[in-house]
Length: 218
Image 1: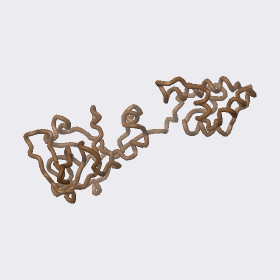
Image 2: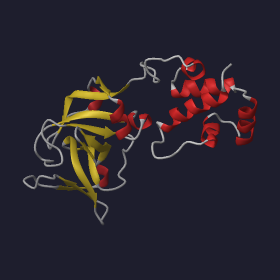
Image 3: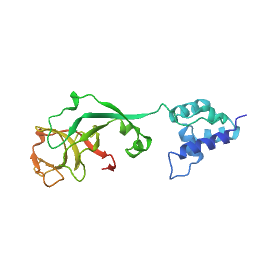
Image 4: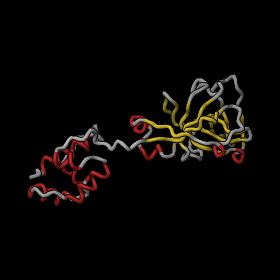
């Protein structure tokens, strides 16, 4: 007979991998299974398994129901087909020059590891990321020639100072943006060898915010 207490301990192990700083209690398992704490306590006392709730949990977490209920040891608790990738535009280079357009370019699928997904804020965050090359020295030392940057295309409105991928009359650029008191924008090259620009709001189209490059998170 399947022991409910053993199953609960396994569920706690699964949940603890997501909540590394907190101890997992029965109430957390009840919440994950979408069962009231009163019904959970009754279920535990009667050694009764809520199979529909457990199946839904396993489907969401991508774990083996056979492992959970019968102790069979799969090679991984995570479905091996659950891969993450983002769009990478190898033919585009953002610089102080320009003239490029992402809409006209083909992209490649860039597979990314789980740790990068977590570093970026989770799989929902990754859905709106795109990878683009940087060329030139105008954004050194923050960005170097040959870097690959990760642009969050969901952040296509100015919210605060930062590095953005933008369209101006000069083309597709990567620059630091600061909003001025008069409503205009400073378009800044971090490398002081290069001159900055001041443009009107209507002259600026934000493609997305640069949130990371290989080796750095902004």
